[in-house]
Length: 120
Image (cartoon, rainbow, N blue to C red):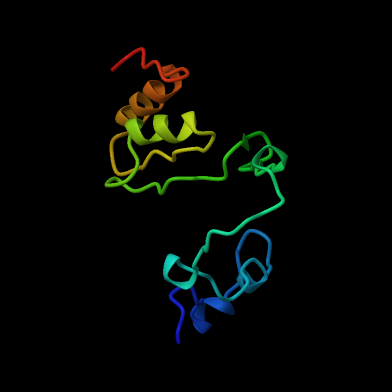
């Protein structure tokens, strides 16, 4: 069974210009998709309040929920970015629009607070 997350051999041997490291050093070589994983409900001794899923998106940005939306024009706009941010993740505004529109989307996201959108 071939997995959809497999890195092509041509890409695996390429080097990055910025640091000279092989790109294969950054990837496991195989990835999983939703079709590859099955979550089965079962009893657990672990309590939800004892679990910490926070992660770093960058040096200065910590996410309370490790969810990042795709920077695609049919996926992430201000509405989705606001919804994801309210849950502790981050939405990446797509670049397939003029810079002014991108800035307006970001302003709209930044103006929303705790479920109250100030500029609908």
